[in-house]
Amino acid sequence: MTDPRHAQPRTPPSDVPYLREVKSYVLRAGRTTVGQAKAYEQFGPRFLLQYAPVALDPAAAFGREAPLIMEIGFGMGGATAHIAGVRPQDNFLCCEVHEPGVGALLKLVGEQGLENIRIFRHDAVEVLNHMLGEASLDGVHIFFPDPWHKSRHHKRRLIQGEFVNRLARHLKPGGYIHLATDWEPYSQQMLEVLSAEPLLQNTAEPGGTGFVPKPDYRPLTKFENRGLKLGHGVWDLVFRRV
Image (cartoon, rainbow, N blue to C red; front, top):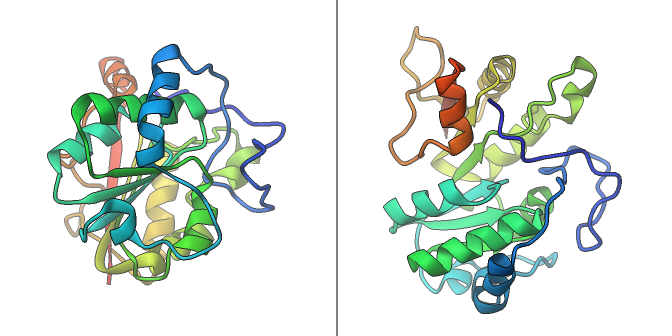
C-alpha cells in the first residue's frame, strides 16, 4: 500500500521557490502537533539547515567528516531516524518540505539523541543544484515516492532520466542510489530509468529480476507492513556510480 503522504499542491509554500520542472515533493495536508512545534523550537536551531544558493560545507554543518547520504522526502521521519541510529558512522542530509514531517523527525532526533542528521525544509532539487557539488555524495535514499498512478500524471514522477542523471553526477565513484516502492508499475519504470543511465550499475544479481532484497538498514514502515499483510509487494533497487 503506497504511503499516502502527498497531495498535489495548488501553490508551493512561501519559502520554496516555484520550479518549472519535476520537483522532489508535492504538499500534503496536515497540522503540526504541540510536540512537533516544541521540537522545532528546541532542536531546529541545531539540526535545521537554511537553504541558500551557496555551496554547503558538510563538515561544518555536521561538525565532522563522514560519508554523506542524502534522503529525499522522508515523510514523518521514522525510517530516517532508524537508519541514522544503525549507521552512526554516516551523515544524513535530509530534505522534506512538509512541516509536520520535519517536526516529527526533529522530535525523534531529540528523543533518540541522534547527532548525524541535518534537515532542509526545502526542495531537494534546488539543494542539489545550488548547494552540493558533483561527486559530493556517498549515497542517495528515496523511499516510496509518489507513484502518480494515472498515466497522464506519469510525467510528474520524480524518478525520470534527467533527474537520475543529476543524482548520478552528484555521487562519488562507488556511491549508491537506493530506491524503494510498493507500486509495481513504478518499480519497473524505476528499473528501466536507472538501467538506462550509463553512470550507474545495478548491484542486483545478474540474470535476476533487477531488484535486490531489502537492505538490513531500511526498516519496514507501518504503511509497508500494512501492504505486506494485504499481499502487496515492495521492490528495492540499489545502483552504484561507476
